[in-house]
Image (cartoon, one colour):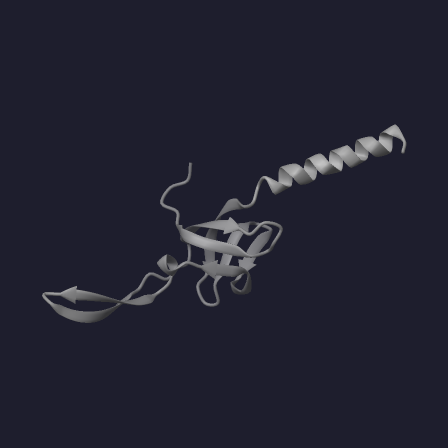
Length: 107
């Protein structure tokens, strides 16, 4: 094996090792459309509903509460609205994104 071939193999192993150490990355996007859900990450990247997983915190959901000893069912209207910024985690080496929550401020 030539020195340059060995060097290329070592570089490839190093890159793979670094990539393996980064299991996921976070991304901030903006809700472009509510139904079906579309999230804009940049001018050139829009994520569509089939690539998104949502936590309950960014959806409408039913819950039960007890008020003065009486159990009652309520709907929490918490679905994402156009223009809201969201925090997402990108699945490693994949095209799926998990929407965690709304972003209050970016730093």
